[in-house]
Image 1 (cartoon, rainbow, N blue to C red):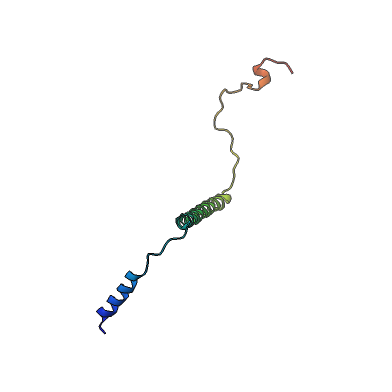
Image 2: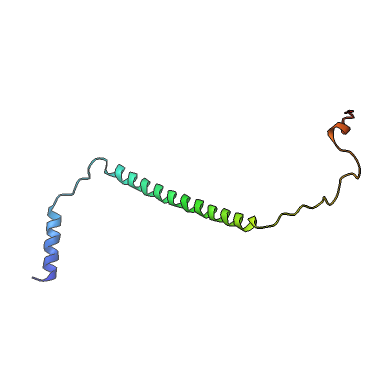
Length: 94
């Protein structure tokens, strides 16, 4: 037999079989599975974004933790020698 004969016999067998009927709720199951895959993808994306932000935050924290702190006097004052306490502004005697 030639290959064409084998193909023709297989096609005839397929043509003789009735169309398979889909069970009830098949499409609901397909959409449910698609939703699960989408949820898994979005969860993975959120996890990667969170991990990236944590790495950036920790890197920035470690990078700035070794900076020395220095106390410096104020460079300017609003009014020289004026007492700006709330008691003096309200003219209250202590």
